[in-house]
Image (cartoon, rainbow, N blue to C red):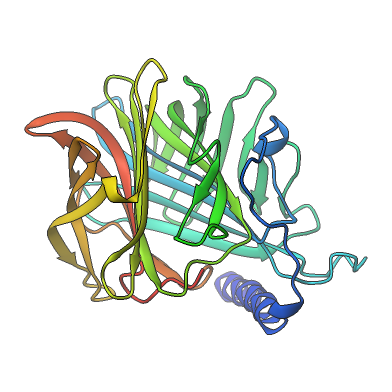
Length: 365
C-alpha cells in the first residue's frame, strides 16, 4: 500500500512539473527573463544565491571520495532552478513560478554501473526552494547550502544510496570567461554567468549497500545562471573539470553542432599560484580515443578523450564506462556524467569529471 502511494505521489509530482514546463513553452513569447550581458560585477555573498529573474540556474558538484579501506567512489549532486514564465505577480502560493530539480549519483567501480536518483517539484511551501542572497537549495529531504563560515553542506537520501558531506573551499573563486561572462556560442547573447570553486576539501559519510562509510576527498563546484538557449545548430556539449594534483585547476568545454563539428569552445587553466590562462575556441579540442555503447539507451559515448587546451594535452580515462544518467523524468535529458583520471603522457596528474550531452538526442536547452 505504501509503495503504491509513493508511486502515485511521484507520478503526480512529475506530472505537475511537466505541466508547468508545457505552460512555459506554450507562452514562451510572453516570457521576460533578465538577459546575460558583458561586464557584470559579481557581488558575494549575494551571487552565491538564486537569481530567479533568469531563466535557468544550477549548482553542480562533482568529486572523488576515498573510504578508510581505500575504496574509490565518485559522486555528483546537481540542483536546478528553472523559471516557468508564469506571471511573477500572481499571489497564489500554488502558482508554478519556479521549478526545482535535483540529480544525485554515486560511481562505484566495484559495482561497474552508475547509481543515481532524481527529484522534481514546483517551488513552494518550504518543501522546494532556491533562496536568494546565499546558497540554500532544497527539494524535500535533499539540500545544498552554504553556512556563515563559507562551508558547503549537502545531504541526499535516495533509495539505493545517500550521503552527508561537508565541502570546504581551499582556493578562491574561479570566474569563467570574461570576468564571469561565459559565452556558449558564436552569438554574443548565447552566454551565462559562471563561476567555479575547484579543490573543495570533502569529508562526511556515504550510506551504501547497508553500510555507512566515512569518506574524504575533493570536489569541484560550478554555479551558473542564464536566460539564453543554446544555438539552434547545437547538438550538445562535452565538458571537463579537473582538480590537478599540484593544486592547479582546469575547465574546458565544447559545444558540438548537429553537423558533428565544433560550434564553440572555451577553456581555463589556473595554476597553483592563481595565475590563469584562457583558451579561445580555436585552442580547445576534444578528440575521441575510445567509445562505449550504452546497453540502456544504445547511445555511443566517447568515454576516453584527448583534450587539447593551447599547448597542453590531457588524456582522460574513465573510472569505469557505465556512468550514464537517464533523467528523462525530470529534465528530459540523458547524459554521461563520469569520474575520470587525467594523464599527461604516462603520468597521472589529476582527477576530474567529464560530462557528455546530446548523444541520445539533441539537447533542448
